[in-house]
Image (cartoon, rainbow, N blue to C red; front, side):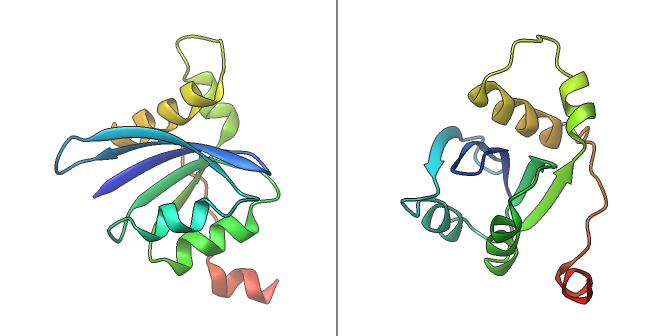
Length: 121
């Protein structure tokens, strides 16, 4: 299974990934306006686990990940931030930290409604 830590911003995202089977890791910046997110997530074996901090303006991304057959976990941003050893933030470090929390089973996952529940709202 591939695990992805995603530091999401309205116009782009920084991702860091780990392939648990091969140990391969990597990172990449995906610009939303140029459509880089869909092909990136589409080429991943299903299901990949994607983790990101709770944030607004990301409904399209949640639906994209789910439509492609991946699993999205949304985490408590304050708890993710509090778990940093170093307090200096940057986007590459944030994505890597989210990935580390996912891989170690320490990701502070929040409940999020599934698509059916969202549609009822």
